[in-house]
View 1: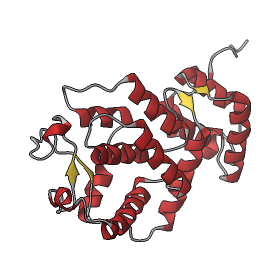
View 2: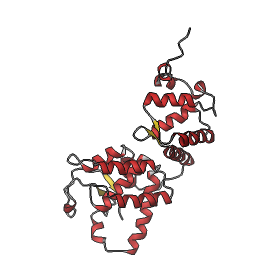
View 3: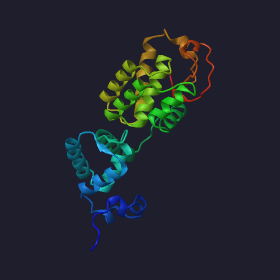
View 4: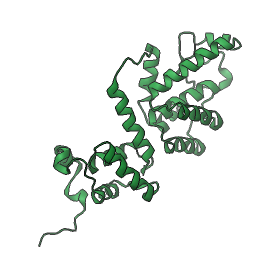
Length: 252
């Protein structure tokens, strides 16, 4: 008698699945929750709220014509701390749709460097890099990053908010109040990508630069369009000793 007790992951490894087309695994518009759960268990993923998440995942698969495996790969890619976050799945799909529409990004050369930087790492690694060898990401900061992810922000957008807030507060510690205000603004403007965030921030500070000249001297130090994360103490802002030349933000 054939042994039917084997786990799905024992029968279909990632390598074997990768060799199959989506249609070989399941027909389009078909969602196999049992297989989805088996893959979750094999990879150590959990739902945030199982009842709600399952319902929303079914909707996503139907609306976007994805089978269970397409959907699972998306869930795994956007999970945070092994937790499936449906909002991030939705945003990832919106990003893909926006990219298909194409069009010029209208980003400057400096902004393109910023975009590349914020897309390069996970938020906790990005923040650690900003702090430098002598710094450490605190539990409070880890909580901030997790909260932002649970709100549905993608990693590149979280990194941009981190970079921007560090630049504006002239600190290597994330200010919860400041980054929360920025997150609320991004949510209100429906920012789903770092590229959109860069354009929104540029627009905002184009307007502010016309309304105030109080920061003119401070802005002269980044007239070329960049401000760098410093790994020295904020008190050295006037004559910083840069030890990490990561672009995080531009100011006019």
